[in-house]
Length: 260
Image (cartoon, rainbow, N blue to C red):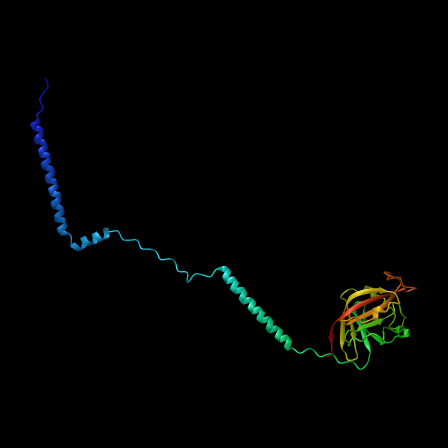
C-alpha cells in the first residue's frame, strides 16, 4: 500500500505563502501613500492636465485675397491696355499728319522747255522740243503738242525719238536701246524752273502707226510715254528698213522735286 499524504504540512505552507503576499501588498500600498505625500500638489495637477487629450483645432481655410491673378486675366488686361495705347497713338499720329500742311505745288514754268534723262540708257539732259513737226525729230526728241506737260495733273507727256537718227545730232541712236528698259527703271524730266519730275517704268506697248489712243491721258495717272520705231512686232533689233511698229514705254510719276 502507498504512503498516506501529509495534508497538514501542505496547509501550513499555503498559509505561509498567503501571509507573505498580504504583507507585500501592504508594503506597496504604504510606499505609494508615502510617495504621494512627498510630491507637491502642483506637480500632480500638471501631470493630470498633461494626461488629458487636447481637442483638435479646425484649420482655417486659405485666404484668396492675396492670391495672384489668373494668367488669362493678366493677359486679357495687358492686351486691353496695349490696344488702348495703340489706338491712342494712332489717333495722335493721324492728328499730327492732319495738322501738317500739304506741300505747295511747284510753280508753273514760264516756258515749255523740257530736258530728259534716262540713266539706264546713258541719256542725260537731252532737250525735248514741243513740236509735231517731223523735222524736229531729226535733231532730237520731241513732245507731241497735244499731250500734257509734267506739271499738269493727269498728263500723259508723250515723247518720241528716232531709233537710229542722224550722226552729229542729238537724234543719233537716241532711243536705240529703248527696248532694254525694264520695269522700275527711272526717267527724269526737268523744266526751266529746275523742278525735277521723276517717273518709274510701269509698262510696255507695241502698236501700229495709226493707233493714236496710246497718246491720250489716263484718268488718275500722271505719266510719261516714250516712243520709237521697231521693224515688226517682237522684232527689236532688225534696224529697218520698214519700221512697221511703234514701241512704247510707259512710266508713272513718283515724285516732284522743286529746285532747292
